[in-house]
Image 1 (tube, rainbow, N blue to C red):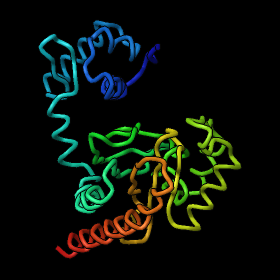
Image 2: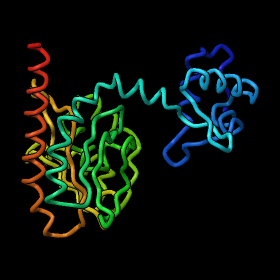
Image 3: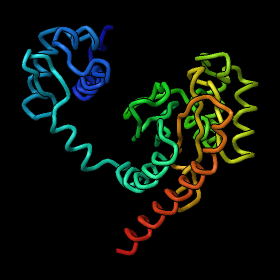
Amino acid sequence: MTTPHHESVLSRTARILEAFSQDEPALTVSDLARRTGLHVATASRYVAELEAHGFLGRDGDRKVRIGVRLWELVTRASPTLSLRDAAMPFMEGVHDVVGHHVQLGVLNGDDVLFLERLSDPNAVVNYTRVAGRLPLYASSSGLVLLAHGPADLKERVLAGRLTAYTPATPATPARLRAALAEIRRRGYAYCPGYVHEEALGVAAPVRGADGTVVAALSVIVPDDPAASAVVPVVRAAARGVGRALGARTAATAGA
């Protein structure tokens, strides 16, 4: 990767922070230089400044990782906190009934970003994780968000690359359009084997006080005919989250 000659300090800083992932949370300065296209000396200087502010930290082996200060600031000011707080009691209730995985996802660009997940040690396979992403067209949460998203988003996703995770993934424009229409018609997504052949996702929309869809609540369970029994549980919980979120909004407005 090469960097533009007149790239701003903020852009370089952002690329350094974005170089970390859940799979690789700790990197050497050389790793960061290679991933960002910065000279090693430049990367080292940026790392030192970010470390001084607490935005980056060092492991015992001197590898670099995201710092506690950055986590503190994000947690303090995140607009998703009220959504997560409103959803957690309902997610816990669903998890008590269903087990396996219960997730809360929001639209972020052309992906679904997962804010929270409750799982069981013996749960079915699941590729999602907290702060992880999946394409909108492949996952139950993403399909709910896409089905209720703006028209330009739908057209952009339909015109983009649709990669099939399994034979069941709606990875052609015709199949995806049909899937979105079905979700809008019945009010939830039912996705057997879309991401993994052994897993089935069920997702329902969470609506804000104004009726717009602000998130998707989903469960990932084994791909089994009995899975249809979880649909009313997920839909009721999603409605509950929406009511709780509306109550929080009203309370804040009246304060």
